[in-house]
Amino acid sequence: MKLNIAVLPGDGIGPEVTAQAVKTLKAIAMEFNHIFTFDYGLIGASAIDKTGNPLPEETIGICEKADAILFGAIGKTSYDLDPNAKIRPEQGLLGLRKTLDLYANIRPVIAYDDLLNKSSLKKNQIKDTNILIYRELTSGIYFGEKTLSDDGNTASDICTYTRAEIERITHLAFKAAQSRKHKLTLVDKANVLESSRLWRRVVQELAPQYPDVKLNYMYIDNAAMALIINPKQFDVILTENMFGDILSEEASVIVGSIGLLASASIGENHAMFEPIHGAYTKAANKGIANPIASILSAAMLLDHFGLDDEAALIREAVDKSLKLHITTPDLNTKYDNISTTKVGDFIEDFIQNPDETNLNFTNIHLGQSTII
Ligand code: IPM
Ligand code: MG
View 1: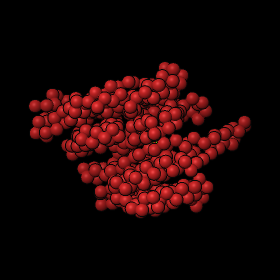
View 2: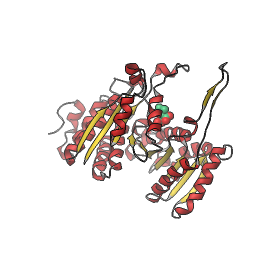
View 3: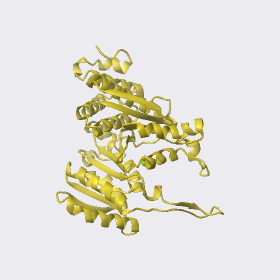
View 4: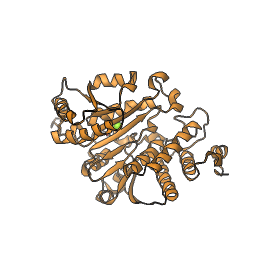
C-alpha cells in the first residue's frame, strides 16, 4: 500500500517520540513491502517561533493532501504561564482538528499485565481493563463562543452541541461496542447541563438501532470515581469533548503511565493519530520521554487502513519491550539507561526480526549492535 503521511512533531517531547513512530512505520513498510512517504509540517509553539502562526497554511495543505497525519505534542511552559497570550500553541492543534473535522477521538485504555504494579491502583482492580473512550473532538466548550468583558473581570465559554454533532460520533461508538463487549456508557452531566440532556435524548433515540448493545448512563463526577474504583465495568465510553479530555487523562493512571496512551482522531475525510500526552517540556531533549504512545498511535494509523498484521506486529513489539523492561524511566525499575531512542530501536529491531531468538537483548540495553 502507498501512504502519504503528514508528520507534525510539534513541541517539547513531540519531535523525539514522533521520530520513534516514524522509524517504526519505516520498518513496517520495509517488512511488508509498503511505500510510506513522510511530509513534515510545523505546528504549535515551534510554528509560532518560525512563522508567528501556530497553524501555518502550509501545514494545513500538507495535512489535507495526506492520507493520514501523525501528530506529536503541543504546548510550551512560557504560554502556560501567560494567561494573556493571544496566540497560543494549542490553537494549532484545536484549529487542525476543527479544519479537518476530526470529530471522533478514540482513546483505548488497556491495562498491560506486565505493568500492573506500575499503577498506583490495586492490581486486582485494574487487571484486564480494556476500555475504548469515544471523545467528541470538534465541538462543545472547547469551540463555543468565548468572551472577556472590557474590564477583564468576567469571562465565559459556551458549550454548544447540535443533534448532528452528537449523532455522528454516537453511531461510531455504538458500532465499536458491537465489535467488543456490547456495552456503551454515555458519560454526561444531564442532571445540570442542557447540552448533556440533548446528548442523552439523541443517544437514547439511536439506541434501538443497536439492540445488541447495552446502553447505560453515568454522570461525569460519578464516572471519574467509577473509572478508578472499578474500571472493568466499562467497555465503550462515549462523551463530549472536555469530559473526554479529563477522563482519558485520568484513565492513564490505570495503565501506569500517560506515556502509553495512543489515540486516533477520525473525520469523514481525514484521520490523525496522536499520543494523548502533552509536550512535557521539562523532559524535552533528555531522552527520557516514553515513545510508546506515539508508536501505538502509528499502530492505530495502520488499523485505520486495514493493515491488521502490521498493526499487530507493532503491538507485539511493544508488549515485548514492556516484558523485557526495555522502557523509558517512567516505567522502568530495572534498568536506568533506556532512552527514548533505544526503545524505538528495540521496536524497530523486533519488527525486522520478530523471532525472539534472534534478538540480543543484552546488547540492546548496552546500546551496542542489536542483532546477532
Ligand atoms: C489532549 C490535549 C489537548 C486537548 C490540548 C493540548 C489542547 O490535552 O489532546 O487531550 O485538551 O484536547
Ligand atoms: Mg488532554
